[in-house]
Image (cartoon, rainbow over all chains, first blue to last red; front, side, top):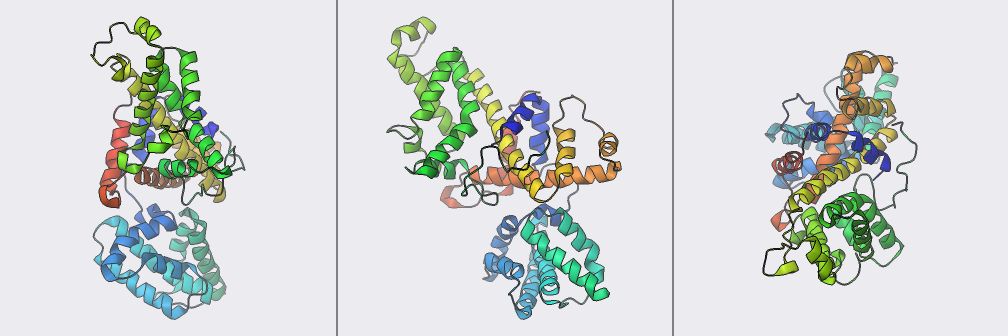
Length: 158
Length: 255
């Protein structure tokens, strides 16, 4: 723990500490972008685990598949279709977002790592979303996939 | 606070990874080891919990010097037979309760060793068991001060990890905006317009950037709390359980 943070918190009132804690609560009525809330790989895998148990898949393997540049396009297609099924079946917003992010990662990975579009949509349509995810997610490994997809999409359009 | 390039001032050992940060339990497990990493873990443990321990003992002992001596004794004896490390496991409940119990026992032991002084200080100790059971009038105050310091230690740990994430993502300005908005010294937080102007951006951009840090903070703090919550049978703590934990931290705090 850094002394810097403690000295900042020493200056804070009890009300400020309460407000800070409340920021982490899901009770707050603020609107959320659930895709961005996932944040990093660990959380993605955590959210996918329960859903994957139900269909006999391993969340870790799915996540690993979309992150690795060596994963063949056929496997990414299979991950995409699994992600789609999971997103449709999910009831709560957080797991639904996790499945949706896995879907986008499989498409972005195929585009960025293999230069292949495995979606019916044109890659340029997904550029704004990929830019948001690349800028806002807190995990370098995840953002790198979207950054590569953005670069591939731009170079393909030229 | 201006962001600094290094991850933390002391420099964390490799096993205190940002993606899999040390919980109280993993830190304790590491601290049991008789190797260099064990020594480092004990130092980290003392650094993390020094203030709650010191403040709790300060109220119970009502003597700053003795409280300081006892807290040093507590950390020095962590590994010894009967020390906290010998008994601490998630099966025995929440870590902060275990820590407080260990501190109360330390004070009881101190009073046993110094019975004459204890009777002078607390002549009305009413229970028949005497100092076997601690019934100090200061206990609610000690609990309150411990809680306040515990919340601060938890938040400080979370903020340090968030700061590190922001640095890795080149989001220094994002973090500075978050800090200025939520940790500002003045009672009234600056407006988004004012904050945006400081960094040459409009209020919407300023708010969005601070919101990015709020998301990091939420993820980091919830994960820390999730890892501290002990669920019977080793099941995962639910989101509702984490929210309950946040409320339990939040409710006793005074404005």
